[in-house]
Length: 366
Image 1: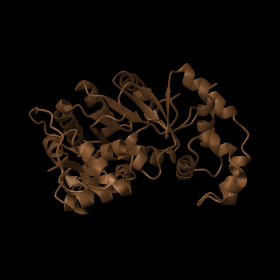
Image 2: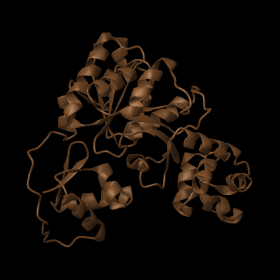
Image 3: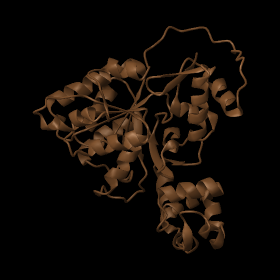
Image 4: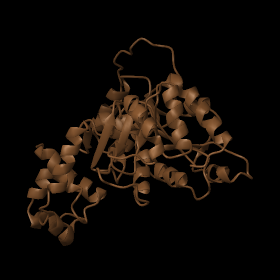
């Protein structure tokens, strides 16, 4: 049995150890097995862990659930993605509450260059359906990966439209991969595994309980470059996802609707509050995200910079030399620097007129 995976799954089963604690411990100890082998006194000294959580870790002995989950993973050819793995979702690494482990079945590249999440009401109108389908159709040349929650309404429409437009689409689930909720989407989910995938941070035998959906929504918000809200009530779950996306420094967009339409109250509200940019078509999104196709250019020769750069600034400029415009999450991933170090380096480079900031949190050399 895979020992590393055993400890990785077991870490999520330790009482009082949440996602933030697990992430902090992994940053310190490097892997899950080292956490279980650490001295209780050392664990207690870690900020945020303390006596109670250290005792929970050292007192954990029941690995049977993790063993059963590994059997399930192997039987159904599921890919576990641990937070320290190189193929873990790089955009999620910049979210403070990244899930320590994800379970994935599919063939989409979860670290591809363009990812959008689409959320909205479960009780959509014809307007919402039309807007969703037109948005997806307008994005088909962009080769984006479309994320949603596989719920009724806008989610389902987005997934179906993506399949029709030959775009890969991934459903983020609020339960384990041994079931499908709603069950009416079982056939759709099967298609998505062949043209995208299914993703969850919940183990098998986990039911789609109410409290799981906010956890699911943080993944929908965190793994994208842009989140689009299409029809939502003022208290809809989509607005919670939009709030999470804003907190993760993602670009948030919303389609406006009639002021008398309850299904558009949420979208109109977040636009009015400057929590979402108003868009009316795919071209608006493409322009703001700086995804417009450009004529192929000859590869740039290595550029000479006649100013003295710090080590961090040199790392950033070397990455920006490689192509014409790099998204902020790609800079985090390729540089290996902390988000604060990247932000500081970019600020200094902008002040020295070496780098320019473009819409969609894209940076390029001047």
